[in-house]
Amino acid sequence: MEMKRDNHTIQFLFPIIVFFVFAISAVTVLLLASNSYAGTAESSAISHNARTTLSYVTEKIHQSDEVGAVYVQELDDMDVLVLDQEIDEQLYHTFIYPYDGSLHELFVSDSTLASADALSSSGMLSSGNTITQVNDFQVDVFKENLLLFHITDSDGNTSNAVISLQSGE
Image 1 (cartoon, rainbow, N blue to C red):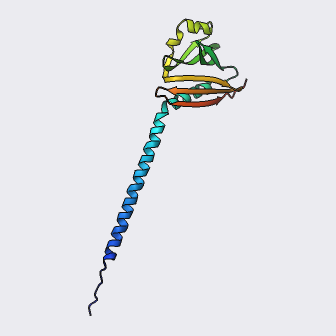
Image 2: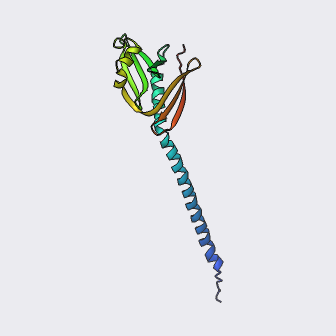
Image 3: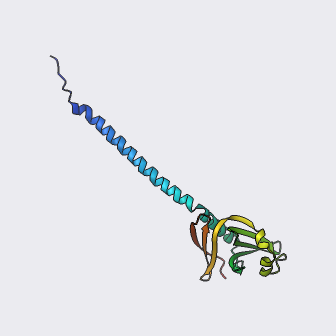
C-alpha cells in the first residue's frame, strides 16, 4: 500500500515567509542603528576641538595646582590664565591666553618678565606657542577655588568647564 503525501502550499511558503520577515527586520534594525551611530559620531566630532582644548587646560592646571600658583590675571583687556612653577629655585610663569584667533601658551622665567605690563608692551604675547584655533577663550574665578572656562572653537562650538583647585588658598 502506497502512502500518499499531501503537500500543502502553506507548509512550503511558511518557512520562506518567516525567513523574509526576519531578513527585512534585520535590515531595518541595521539601518536604524547606522543612522543613530552616524549622528552620534558627527556630534562627537563637532565638539572635539573645544573638548580637547578644555582637557589640555585642565591638565595644565592640575600639574601646577599648588597654593597661589594658579590664578587669572587681566592683560590687554583679556583674562589670562597664569600658572607659576619653580624649577631649580627659579620661578617660571606659563600664560595661557587667546591671541589672534588661537589659544596660545607662553612660558617665561620670572627674571625675563619684569611685570605683566612688560609682557604686553614688549609684544611677547605674539611669540607664544599656538595650542589650537579658538574663537573665544574666557576664564572666570567662580567662588573661592573654582575656575569657570568658556571655549568656542573655530567652528563655533562651545564647551564649558568648571575646574576646582585642590590646593586651596
